[in-house]
Image (tube, rainbow over all chains, first blue to last red; front, side, top):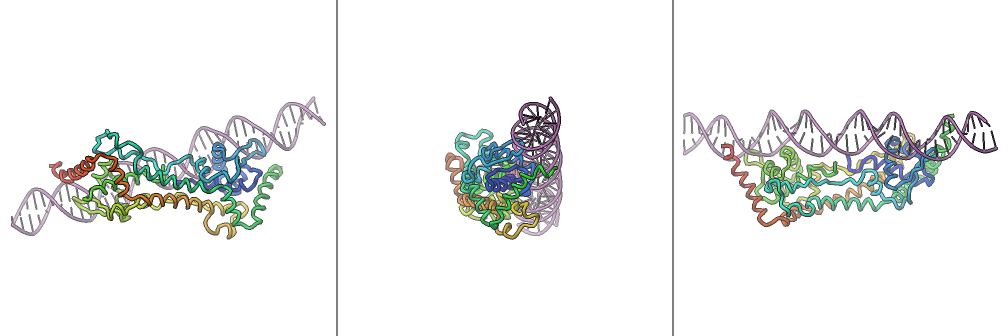
Length: 171
Length: 171
DNA sequence: GGAAATCTACTCGGATACCGCGTGTCCGAGTTATGGTGG
DNA sequence: CCACCATAACTCGGACACGCGGTATCCGAGTAGATTTCC
């Protein structure tokens, strides 16, 4: 089990394509486009909505849209929204358990943050800083720069087809 | 569950005290000093030994000693030894699942590393770099600088008492 | 033709099941110093 | 006094139980647009 969950990966991939189409899309279309479990993605998007990254529109022809420009959404934002502000390390205050203290640690032993904890927090800050450097717009640009020019049009067509032909499928 | 396990925390605390006493110590003494589960700590130390961080001496009066100076052991070394080279993120190659590919992704889609994966790897490198900055010697110095001067002597006495009085306890 | 009822395609949120992994414990096997015993 | 043996104190490694949380699925409720029905 990795620190950054599969949920974040799914969310990011969906958001990337949401950033591509300015029109917005439903969770089903997004997740089926990525080959990602639909129900799971739906749950992820409600978290993204609560975090103010996307906005939802209910009812038929509803769906999700980015709440702000893709350039203003960082990878760290998405991680926080989906995984919650998960900590790299949770300190168990071992320093207070020293046998010499006999259950009653003196003040100097528990003052401030544990030295080991401090190192871990520094590492976490370094990681978050790196994740904050990358925006959805950067990522989307890099993804689509790898693909041939026709790809982006195919994607857009696929989404619009799905949106318009939905009803006629059933009848 | 945090990314850096409790095992690492336990291991680091024990190693800190092992760095303090040049004589080496048994797992039991180390773990009881820290109020850490003994059997669990034993398991951790075998991993530390395999990674070449400590050396073991079997038999009665055996125990563990640092395999090299504390200044040459980084926090990252300990993390790798105990948690294994755990990855922050494991890419599921979602990019190959795009519905447009219909199960057979073209070469351009899977070439190189996934863009999202690349960002995560950069973040991981940043974190590891930070953990590599700190050595056991640094940490030990910081810990003992917080404590009164008498503390270090009490620790050493406690260890030597345990080592010498072990046999006489039973008789 | 327009208003009301119905239907459909969404979002939203909770309940639940599964499963891997971290945590912790236990136990047996191997190893070495120490203390005791017999020649 | 010395060789031998038993024992204690370790390490080493595997097996196993437990519980938490990530992953995934299902379902009911609410909402809004489109369609149909009815006057």
